[in-house]
Length: 128
Image (cartoon, rainbow, N blue to C red):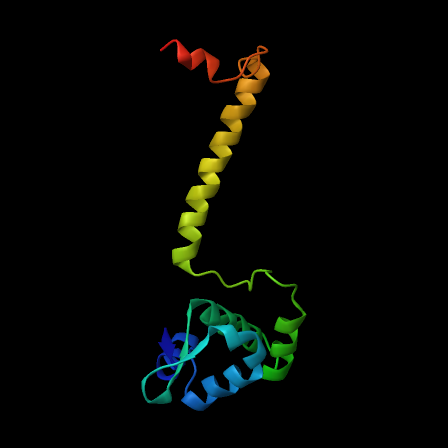
């Protein structure tokens, strides 16, 4: 969870007011990711941080905060914000590589005719 003060540095902004303005601009998108901490401080979780980073990215590309917020709302539900954290991309790349190898292996089994032979795949392991 990130406080408004921490978000200032993470998003590369100068003041907490700028962070609060961005939070207000997309409060409807952030609602499930906003929490209250000690002394009623605003806390934002990882997904909320991704949304704020996407908003900030659009602002840095020349959009106003209001235009950027509208652009985020127009994105289909579940669409990637376009900002991936390095921690999230590494496991995803490893998983993708693993799945590609698995598909190649299964394709080889099918093409070599070893996968079928009219009996269930587990039958050949029963004799072991």
